[in-house]
Image (cartoon, rainbow, N blue to C red; front, side, top):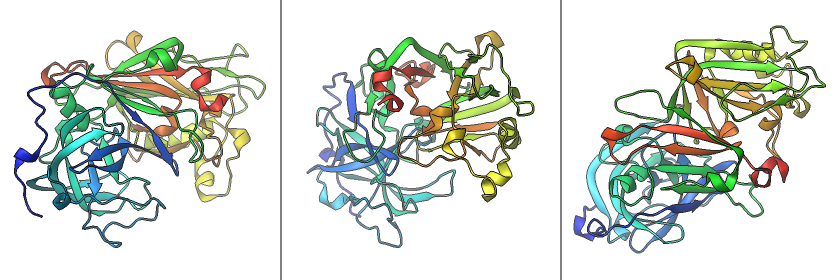
Length: 406
């Protein structure tokens, strides 16, 4: 690649204005992405938004069928640094390994970005990737939404780039997945950068926030996990899910079940953590409790995994719920978020066992199966790293914005 002079980049530093950037969510084959225009002349690229990583990347024009296999059915656009007059080769390379074993390698680049509607332009660093094992994603790359402290050499996260340049109204972003999670039909989800729209999407209970685990520096949207709770009722009863930060209750007035020890809380004994990861599709619970979670719901995890038992849609019902309690200070300040059994159903999709093994003790990975049930807010708490007080908030959706009620 031929390096180019940085003078080609957009000169925004002298005159910036705060903005709220609305990025429509595109869903294809269950993958959720947003679109940016990149380069001069600009070309559109779809990036899968991922709070579990921090660097933006896109496949480049050097990719081959073997180095960047694509079995997604989506026609990817390869970034070409030589075709953009505003591109800068930053002279650094990097490799990103992901928790599921996939990974990418590429070179650090800077170029001009704008949102899909072309309302805001800025200079952004990212990786131009010539090797990727992400063969099934219906996108041209990833949009890392974690903290820049773990961004790859020569890059910073997109949100913090805008934040540090004074281009955002507020140090936060909000996410709504939409009323339609299918490929066809109108999709109305939105990733809002520089603000949030809880007044539009969230019901009268409002948003409940949990602080992130204290870290220096902050890396991911990682909260201190106090405990995990399974609650189960009789088949004729219903779990009443609230969003007041407390455990749910039962319409039967008490928690009863034929399953042994079905109403159980597992403490993480001060060492637990949960990462909220939009790039993960499912919910993974700590290794030490995954079998017990299924046992307390009347199932055998080993038999489910081997196919001896089969999860049917009727098993994903309102008679049970899974709760995560967060906190590392006084227990009275803890907050709990709950997902009920029937909320694991995704319209038009197969019914699968609700949770996986995180392959870590005390570690939970909370992905889209949970996140799409809420309007979520990722708040840095300040626009300077030294002043960050990050927190993550969840609000239950109004019925008119809930895909389960459409």
